[in-house]
Image (cartoon, rainbow, N blue to C red; front, side, top):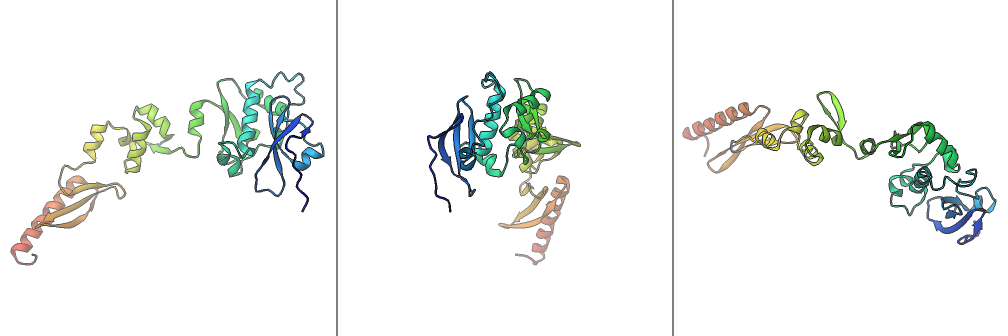
Length: 263
């Protein structure tokens, strides 16, 4: 096994090594800062043999784009994927998300792609498929709303044949995301998700003792309490039917007791 060489503080081209990065790889990676202010993750061998000497800023001429918003987006994209100290690393690099070879070492390639594909200062970079890499055919420029809708944690709900995110339904209906998600978890479906609180409470409360809505089965759990004991009647879809069956069951119990069949 080659002897470990500490490169901390060493300078290679425009890059100054700041610290060693802990990775699962057999190769040693270092976090570096570029003279232009950029950041770069680099392997020991790439630094020492001169393959990696800058953050990708070479070719920018007078470096007049290092202060451009796109330069910060490019750096942030790489930071999320390769800097294990980044607060977002687990959601990106930790899941195997990478930056394509076309962009990772060449900012101008990224800059040119951005300018040719609808970039403006109000948008941010978004991956179409959140499980794939940062690459031209998987990235687009998105509004904050579109970004919120394209997340792994985002919930999609189908109502009257239309599929939208919880956030979108909340904006359309005026009902909060929290309320919609809670109702959905409780078994509420369709346009009932957007009913005023008073209406939905009334709809999912029978008003009859021992008849309760079962969220998982989406049925009315119907019981009868007779002579101090509870008797299960059944899980019934229609409330009126549940009330009728409850009354019938109770009458049967009374008759059986009168005939001495039950205590």
